[in-house]
Image (cartoon, rainbow, N blue to C red):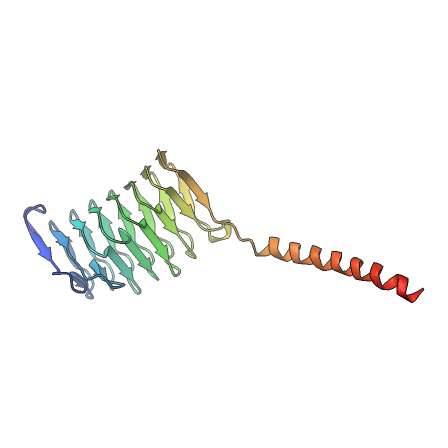
Length: 216
């Protein structure tokens, strides 16, 4: 625990993870964490464990602000300022049942929060996500995530959610000045099947009309 987060700095010297959590029940609070390496998944904080609390830190000028990598779960991430990192503020990969409350995430070149690879059942409540170049929250191939009462300001996309069958719950969010406030991904496979079927049917009739006169 650091006494003053603006003055107590952990610097990664542009190499690898700055802080890596592999034990459970760890608490990190009150630091500026900066200058990770620049190869995926280098980050200010990398979490590989469960039941940790990460609160009241500044994560800046890292490749990713934070990464939650499988089996990271049941972690509480609250009241952090995550700004001006080089990819996402927080990147999830196979990370489920985590809770993010009251974080300020801004000016990421990609996503504020990016949930990938079946990062399921996460709770994202009361965060402010602003001026992120792709989206404030981007959920891909992940089930039953809860996104409520967040503020999305000036992002290219405020909130991107997967198709309805992924059962994302989103309500009570505030959107202002985003190019697109809410974007819902659609599954185009059924449409493609229908289109392909129509093309086959048209082709069948064209061939039939072309062959029929020759038989006469």
